[in-house]
Length: 175
Length: 175
Image (cartoon, rainbow over all chains, first blue to last red; front, side, top):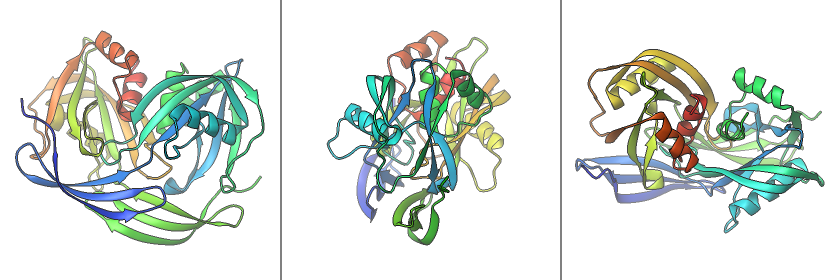
């Protein structure tokens, strides 16, 4: 069987932002041809499905500039350099929703869009929620919305959840 | 309630590739502050969960340069300009796997990573598969792998599916 690996010939960093680094690389394909690969380097992220004792789910409504819409999502955030994913999940949950996770269970770790970015997402289920104080970043604007299990199922059935990590998290949490 | 919308102040295209366009924008936040938004503009994509009469699933193994791994995924591909998502799904399924879909059912349309990209993914379930001829793009290298329903459930339970669209597709197809 042919080795599927694409070998890097050259790599050019075409943009270095605060969050993203964009590379335009040349690779050697298995058939010897050259091709270009446009790659978005990302620090990685976490997302958390916070579920109350009654089975309600805490979601956040926030404006997403790239798609120009206010989306309903599970709490999430980017990994700080060197930060452990589970610590990041606890931090982001508390910052965004004002709840601390008594129990945190790992659901999945996956690539968001491996065709063009290395973003890795670590997804958790949070239970035994303890209210603390919502403490979002200064420049983060988020509304907290609480939904019953039945409402979550309705949102899914009506295809109103349009964010990948939220879909995966809710489905894996059994909704 | 505060309007969450972030208003564009300026937009700078910092890279125009064959597939991706990268913008570095300035926005006005709801509190009046300025912030930057690094945005990856993408043409959109489709993915298909091909299920046989016996409940087997056809997956593709392919090298993903951004993550330097051979991933197991549902067949997928980018939308051509002006192409209808369902037509694209049928085309990509046949090109990558050599099966034509007798029935195509829409499962979900969602954003892969709306924090930094506008990539939209249209996800379908394909049934009544009719073998034709695998006809991948010249520079596309893909192995076809067929899994029983039990094997798919094992792969999911062992967290061996690490691609977002594949997770969503298999979960929504009931695996």
